[in-house]
Image (tube, rainbow, N blue to C red; front, side):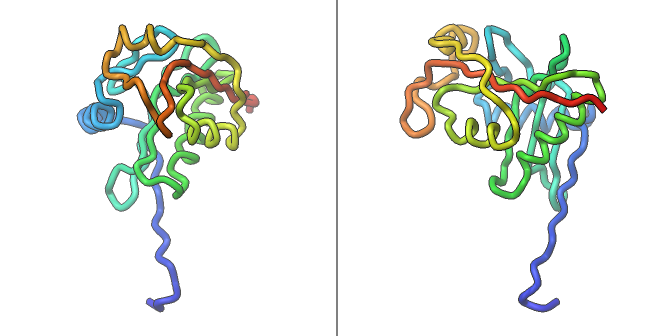
Length: 170
């Protein structure tokens, strides 16, 4: 192979299978600090939810879990273990496609006020801010004490923000 040619490394995006549950549980614990995620007063157990894995060279490089109800597909967790390589975008697009398959009209997610990188990422992919819950993280900490008090860029974590992307029917 010529030195000036880049090797293309393909990503495989696939649905989580039962055989993946141990890996998903380990990743959730490692990345989220607990086996639970909390949003808008609801406790989720991501390792038991449907979702997607992104694999590259037989390694998991991305994970998304979701819950679907009432016309929404809610992204509960999303993690790109290799940033800037399209992993997160691939996961979002897989979620949008699944929302269409399930007949959902919107994809929704919740983040916190400190997560500026996520806010930029989601808005660039068609999500719009739809709700602000001031001081909601105080209640979330009662359900999940592992939530830190200070987050990205030294910003105190206090509020929840919802973002949504409309999904056009097929």
